[in-house]
Image 1 (spheres, rainbow, N blue to C red):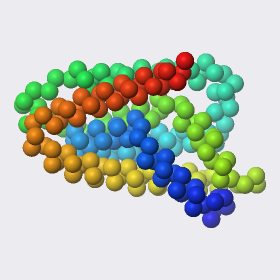
Image 2 (cartoon, rainbow, N blue to C red):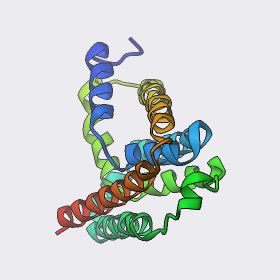
Image 3 (cartoon, rainbow, N blue to C red):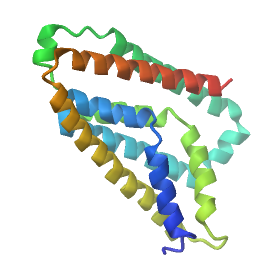
Image 4 (cartoon, one colour):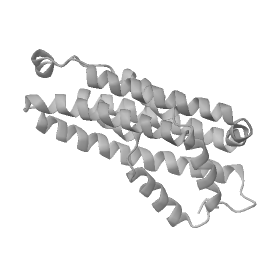
Length: 206
């Protein structure tokens, strides 16, 4: 289908990779838990835009350029690690008073879009992933239409999965809202996880 080899396996592989938690997943869940479905959807769109930009860059050969100039790749890795660590520290050190827990100040979905986009773009390994992943399901004579169809598959399936995350995350967050300690704990755990992702990215760059 769409000249994609082993189409069913391609779809299953995308879904499996979506199940692997990463910084983007955490950004979506954090936005949803803090400010509801609209905020979560803002983070979803930010993640999808970041992935789309990297897919286009991979197709255009940016990965080959980064292999030729490894300092560029290393810079983006260190920048990504620092950014994730900074976001994590903000969540860990953000004061949460009783008043804030009872009437939290809601932020617009645009704020979470920008945060999720930044998180997505600070992991340049995504380019290499798409460079390695797409050829597994391409014929040698594949056209640009086939590549466009593959990118559309990734985007649509990612959106469906991440929309599910938002809806489930919002339901859980509403159930936990009656527990004053729940929001503070979730915020601290999110901050710790972001720092963990940043440290992992930094260690991979050594």
